[in-house]
Length: 178
Image 1 (tube, helix red, strand yellow):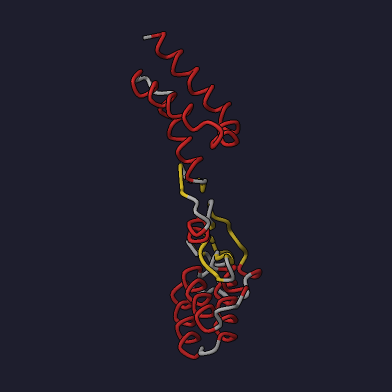
Image 2 (cartoon, rainbow, N blue to C red):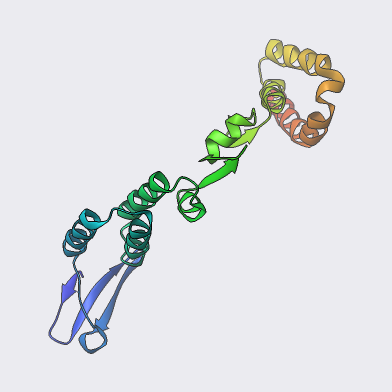
């Protein structure tokens, strides 16, 4: 609630605010009162089912940090609880629940520019960036390294070929304007 008048209340939303008639409002709860209620409920929760119910209550009352804490409690008390792990963004890998990042690492992937890729693809991305470099020595080294990869990187090379040609063309065009 941002502002109150006798017959209506202004409510803050993520992208602005709206006025709501008081007659249309059953109850106004402040964030502080919700957090106090949460703390009271949390102190009485001891089982996975109780923490699950509290996590859902937190979701319903827009308490995301508290909701996460409750899902973590569910996962701790019931390590195979799929609902809790899904809510936490976990995935199953080799029979174990883990974060998506840990699963990607366990698969041998590395992160490049926000994307999980094979180490070979990561190397190719780096070489393509160097092949588009304005530095002629760096560009030549990259071209030699790309040739050396040969068949080992053929599939990834083909997937990245269009990108490489575009970057290289842009670098050459820029070089000619200098």
